[in-house]
Length: 111
Image (cartoon, rainbow, N blue to C red):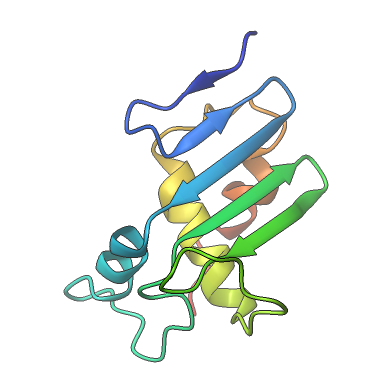
């Protein structure tokens, strides 16, 4: 399998890893979804990059309003898991090595 961009160009899918790029607008819209909002979001309005392999998260960069990386961002890990799972569920094949840690382990879970 060769690396490729997902159809929405948010995920760079490699044979054994995934890079997820979300804009500030993406995180804002995700946190404010009707019926599925995240009221105390730590990510809303911040762009982010999350790198994952079969062991889980290997890199996280959260950006400020000027597009600069935030040193030691305070991020709710449950929110981060949820936003990653929601975006990758639609684009990552279930047989991909990252699927379970990014999406599968949360299927059927409730907050």
